[in-house]
Image (tube, rainbow over the protein chains, first blue to last red):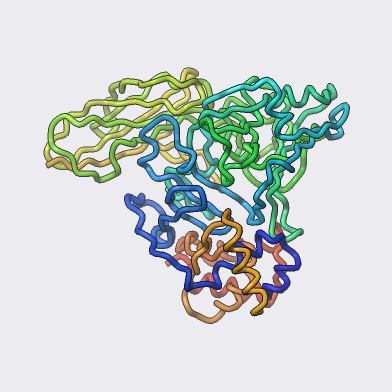
Length: 409
Length: 94
């Protein structure tokens, strides 16, 4: 057995704190039921989730308390920018320190660099600033809708958000030390860690080519404000177009390496089978014969104007939503109201850039009774959404076209 | 234990940046104490409920093994078996 005393001895104070909450049932509070949960989620998920507010956050859909995994409710996706206090929260491991911005330091170096430098938050803010509006989405968003179900955090639709990120370019930061010609990856490490030392710390790497892109940042602002604690305060890596797993929160070190980084979270996790997805962006130094790290997001869309099964008045109904992809840009969103036999283009809304949520809308004539609406996003390089789920063991890249039911009276 | 509880309470009131974790009550059945005593050290027990009831016996064995072999959970073979048996019996596929 693992006693609390042992736990206090081995883990950080933050862990002991988080772990301690369960012993105070007297502090429990009313938890409203979660509206509009997808019926396809596992029954156990549907019965355990609650609306819960983390400090500094609005009530979000709590999947797990510790580590905290909270998804954003549908209503916050009706604008292309997601509010900071409603932005989803995702952690793998539960020792999450509150970082003191005044003491925070970013170490830049590694055996693939020509030197080492330590930057403070002020140093970072004095560098030329760049801004990018980009979608941050968990690789496993919509995992809970997999059939058959696969284990993991059983996300519905809301493990994503779009924000305007401001920070220093990663390439400018690496230029401070200079990286060697044979550096192939940049290893990203954050301040948060595991409860036990033997648990592999959440550390990721990205190809040097991705690190050098103009839009890859170490961001210290989100929608004009400091990052919320639970979204990586005081700074996190931003890899627009790529899955959220690379957007290292509470970033504390950037290390250039000349050999593929072989940590657990690269070698054994966040991998997709080779050849199953029509992906362009590769992570060649980490590929094996059978699988590859997840890279860019696949085109996807979400109907946000109505929850599934909503009651509407017969007649004209404006259906709207958002679409996004891995950063090529959305070309069209098509709508079908006959189960996918015929498709008509929706009207695209404000363009906040190729990495952002792209709003769209469509005027549907709802007939009395049950109506179905399907949406399908296609990007400028022709990637589109799948009709049938592409199975993969960890439940990534679910971009199955959504079918929404509207009941007209 | 009492000292620890007070320390936790004091820390909780002064540091706001953690989830206000509510007690998760798993099904009362043989082995629950072993599950609570081991699994809850690293994660809240809603992880169990969330991943149910779709894992078969092999699926739950794989999860318990993953926590020990890949995530380094210090759990004895004896406890691991009790945990797996509890999960299969109470949160396994129908």
